[in-house]
Amino acid sequence: MSGTNLIADEPGDLRALIRTLKLREAELRQRMIAHRLNAPLEGAQYTVTLRSTERRVFDTALLPDSIRTDSRYISMKTTMTITAKRQTPAQTAQ
Image (tube, rainbow, N blue to C red):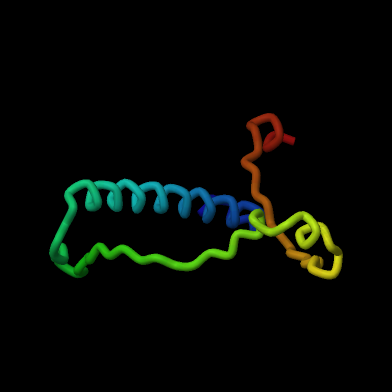
């Protein structure tokens, strides 16, 4: 976390860490898929198994325009979002 421990810095620091971890996980995932493991991979603490799954997806783009643009089928949803943007050195000096 940031040395100043400002609440505004913590979400940005966490997201940077999550981004780094997700990239590393994706790298490892690709390596395991490339090796086409056909048996569980045993580690010191974890066992990793690759499996493929399928799921049904409802594709609204395939619906006729008369349904997609009909306000009876549209609802509004409000979401609160926190954004974190790293400040430039000039901004932090202020």
